[in-house]
Image (cartoon, rainbow, N blue to C red; front, side, top):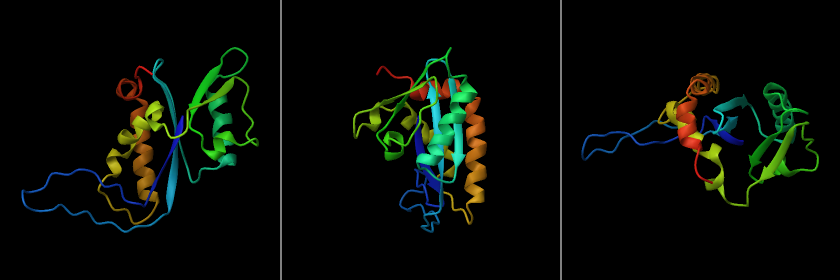
Length: 163
């Protein structure tokens, strides 16, 4: 599980350009954004995306509770979530739902987090695009996440690695 911040801040990606000419992408730096929460289990092809306006302890608590209910976590099913050490993951104010155990990665080790590799898939339709309002990237991202929910073989290829 991990979070990814997106929105009106441009995502610049590679593009083809005529030899000798630099490609241009219209951008207007703005910080208004969204937070994408992603859960993935490479072994079972299960996963979820949650698109919300912020990332903090209260929002993470709500997502964690809904995740536990939607996956059937509880007395008969235990889910271990691998997380980074973000403040809203490690605060003592966070109450972990029944059936969910949090396990933390070492500091500064995003390469160990399988979900980090999903961001290239979620960001693809947003690259090199300019959006006037937050509604447009939100709609584009929601469409991409719905599509990815049906593409778990692709997601598994990105997230299932030996460690």
